[in-house]
Image 1 (cartoon, helix red, strand yellow):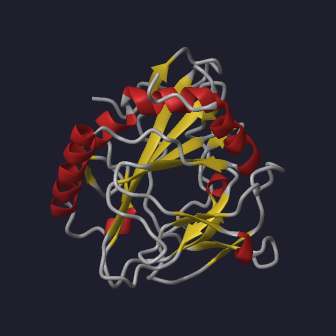
Image 2: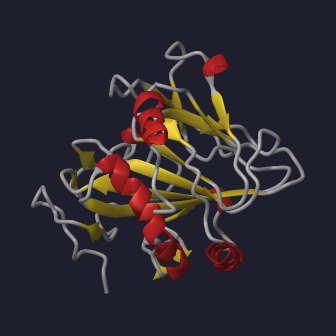
Length: 267
């Protein structure tokens, strides 16, 4: 399979908590999604482009964004799901998609954090695929990770920051890690990275002259439950979400847990 991870890539993900696979989006898929990005931004003039949550839900997504089917198509793209299957197994649920578009000169910082604090998934297990639609470099605020910070499967304390210039309003408490250990995940359009739900990661503000956009696709093994009754960090993240109404898609296999709801949110 052209999208298959090598044994070395799988080992890197397991040991370091992230990997940049050799596979890249086909040019036609990339161009179609880039076009959809421009439409998404035009359709959401009142939303900060770093906060285009659930962009894969077409029309009014109940989370403050007018979404596009093109991002659902990207999340369902077979080569990407093939990669995910090698990391989390054959029973795969798509539960989220977030477009992070950092404008040139004034793109928001994403503080150091762990995704697991925000999500109603139990047991906590998710693979995020971060797909670059534009160059993502040190200069314009690429994704940064702390290698192996996922290893203990421990959620560290986070502090709330009441600021309006952040993608998220939760920041990792001081003293947990050394920022000097960070790896900068520089990507060109069509490349992607994959990271574990416990991975400590963030991104600097974009003060460069080049916009930076990535699409974070969220997948969980169907042995976990998307618990709509949970409200982690309710109202404290700076990003409006509605987990109670968000649709789920069983992309492959079966609902091993037997408790996931694949009806809510679907027309």
